[in-house]
Length: 185
Image (cartoon, rainbow, N blue to C red):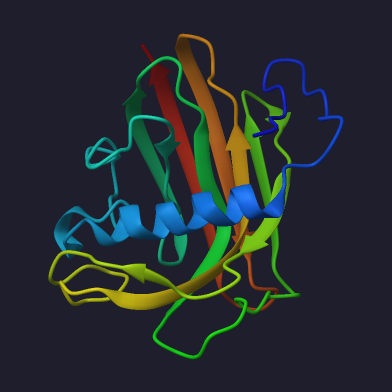
């Protein structure tokens, strides 16, 4: 994985490879599906559910179903952060790559420094098995899902408090904005 330095704002010498981000995006969608609606990280208004079902190698953060939210969470030291500034997913459907939203725009910053966003989507639908009443598939059995988004990947932030904000729009009336106060320990 290639990272943008969140402390110096230095751009990477090469952009992250789309297949790596597409794989992380698929894992992010599967992570969201592991939550029932009341504890969905997307519906979470405070950040109290941010630590549920997190993988050991990366820390996923969520946007909203539309509109703005402010959250607080604790992140273990040494974990890169991965999030969508803007994304969509589709359950079922045919094979083939996820369709890009060419009107979508997004932004992200950590501690006031801009974070690069990379468009990435699934080349083919991938299986997602979630809990009953999850926000991705609704059902507890495996279903094919495809996704596309503008994704941010940040190397592990140093221990301490950080302010992260990200969001995006479809170029029309739909927009999302998430502001996180993160404590890295």
